[in-house]
Length: 433
Image (cartoon, rainbow, N blue to C red; front, side):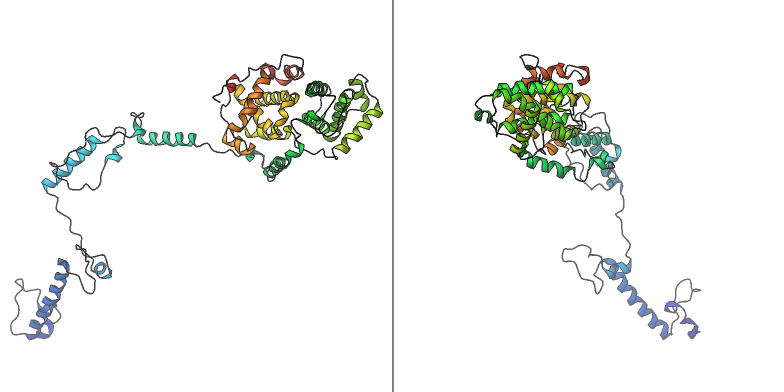
């Protein structure tokens, strides 16, 4: 019997319902003593004493989790939910919901774990401040309010548009090099500029005569149906030549005809013959005189005909402004008015182009602020364009009056969308802009 009792823990038979011990058995007595000491040690750990070899937390409370405590898998003892505690939590939840601002969804008012607060001591603040984002959205949901706020922030922070994204598959657009090309144009555009007072070096001609010549060449250009690039290069060649070579009054028209011939050779596919240019100038010059002036002009200009004109910048800036046909025609009308005016030579071609686009936008009411995209591609902000833009508005206002009305008559036709009939942007003349 004694040998079989060792198979049971502590030597206790399961058939003994009272748990009585068999007296006189030393092995059983010794086993009971060992079992009691082991249980007491485990119970001591349950109470909260630091189980060896875990360190005791100096801050008090339960020690930090360690390998010892994790292996023991001590059960978490929850505080029993009494009626008083449940009433306090329900009262707290009701008070929080009553003081929450309107428009919030139920999930925003739910709290998973409410702290135990004495209801008698808790006093909610009077006139709970309503968030500013909810002042004008009393009937909207919380998600709708957030969407509105995000859209307003995106509208305030204007993004720069990638104007070349639609041309990446077009090899003729050279999207990979377009920014470098215009950076180069901006860098070398000073070579195409002339001193704004170069007429002071001329003894027999003045700025009014230059205006008459340019106005006549605009009509000739329109009659021959030449490319737009040809007109801008023609005016550039005239100014650059007159800035370095004295010219008598009788030869001024010859300078204009020769400059038109050179520009056509540079830009056009089909170049007008010299005889046509002689006829258009009322046979005032001979063929030999035209060829002689051509030789003199290219030598004085050192054969430098590859210069960035205002037209080169206009095409890029119009694209940055995401223009339509109406805006494009009006912008070209405004800048051609400036070609006739001598005093506009003080502005570089890039600024003339940017100011023409901005003035046209204001004239049509499409935009009254220079966009971030246009500013990035033109390298001019709105403040820098205002002086030039105001002068353009003045020229637009008086385009139909006076003797030099070639540009106005040209853009008063259906071919150019009657752009000359548009109302000038008078508000830009206000000192506040």
